[in-house]
Amino acid sequence: MGQGVSRNGMPGGGDFYGSPIYATSLSHDRQTEVRVSGDSDTVQIGPRAQLPYLETAGMRRQDFFRRLGLLVKTRGSRITQNAEVVIADFYRLDGKRFVPRDHGQGPQPTNWHGLKGPAEASCGLRVGDTLYAINHRLVMNKSKGQVLRQINSLLEKGDGATVVLTWKHTEDVEVVSWENELCMPPPEGVHTQMENEWGPARPSKISSVSI
Image 1 (cartoon, rainbow, N blue to C red):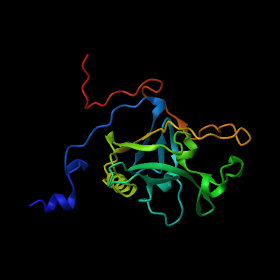
Image 2 (image 1 turned 60 degrees about the vertical axis):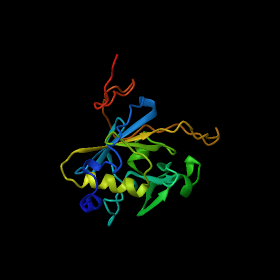
Image 3 (image 1 turned 135 degrees about the vertical axis):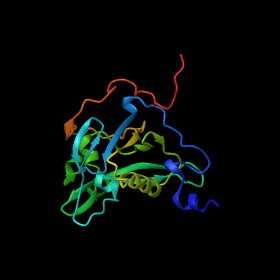
Image 4 (image 1 turned 120 degrees about the vertical axis):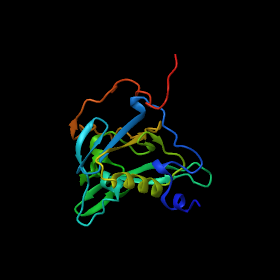
């Protein structure tokens, strides 16, 4: 009794103590959506599409964040129920090595070198952003390992469906001294017109709106 649920989890990826909570809409300047297709070698981040993953020989597809060029960590604690997955740095591929950009090559942009990952190349994500939702379901009190397992299980279904990761931008923008400031390079990839690009995101189909 219950062993199957304990072993296989709840249908639809829900929690044991309640149904999944659908994320509320964020305005365009508070979020970036990462759209991943399980059978594609490229990813769409915000309005920039066809961005290639960072790959090395013998790299596992399960190391999803590294393929995006993101160094993420768990901030907070699941014990105190405030755990969240946050971007700590960007990875660059220097030869065959993944090098943290800010912590490995220093805070000055003039010292950065190597191949950019799709997250950095898109200019859509930044250090301090937190993972807000997976397929429009709110990510609550989850560690990096739990989130990775959830993303990989969705990608391994093999049905070709797109997995949507919603990242919430931090309100704190890192201050760069004017001596180190450089013009932001134009984003890479192919621009795609997004729905409601310059307005608030449309409400979730699940939520009802009464006037």
